[in-house]
Image (cartoon, rainbow, N blue to C red; front, side):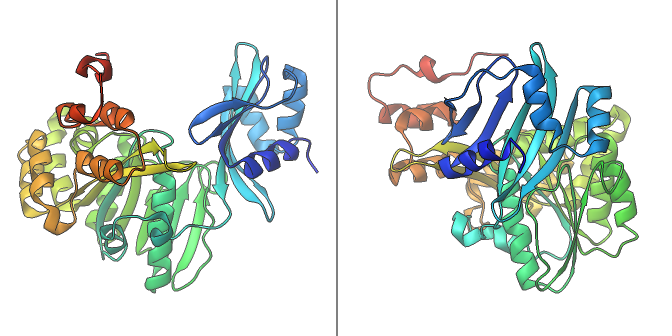
Length: 363
């Protein structure tokens, strides 16, 4: 048994989402959104490096020593999988372990909006799940893949860095490829994917122009493409995709994206106050003809209006989702106000607070 296994078991037993280990500090675990120190001594660089190298694949150690950071997956059989990021920092080596449950939670268990399972049954198009780091994008995407896997008879191909949730083949054949292990890059795997007869392609993250371009192309050529982006809402997601292309290509990309896009699901995580845990608020944009026209015409700033008037199509605004969680008593008025878009709507629900207290400092 690797020495680090004891920390990972403690992480699972404590219900932590992340384990932080950094030279010059004791270990810390993130439990229900808050970092808490583990009762253990300060980690020395040589000790921590030996612990981490014990579980790191040899080829990844070489990359780490050349570049200063790597990602890989690690599994404790019968317990859980972990997404590991190792990095060099001022005091030496550091690492963050993200817990990936061994069982994929279903859409029903997660309480996902019903429209998300309908997206899993689309024959083609681009579906984007977005949000900041740690907002649960991978968990939502895994539930969508799981629903498709159990309700379709198709080929699902995932491209991840690293592989997180492990999917067994049910109704579908599921092949999972890891960047750096099974393929050189997301772009290389996507180019190859078009020759592998997939029906559904899941791209762990659309990081660069080539990956985004190939994902849109795959969606336009008869595949259902599911992907993530680190963006905060639907308008910013559309803008981010278009703006990564050279200026002269943007009008064509805007038109192509309008045709390819099927939905943008943006999520924001909240700490629960009714019980230990966290809960997600969703913003959902469905690519109706009205939404497509706004994307094509470069009027993404009007997409919130489409979302507000598109509830019959399964759309919902972030503020409506936050208000629903607040009315159920799941989240605090203060956090609702802090993460809301229209803060004036939530201000009356918070006692003795000024609106300026919950306004983000301009960057």
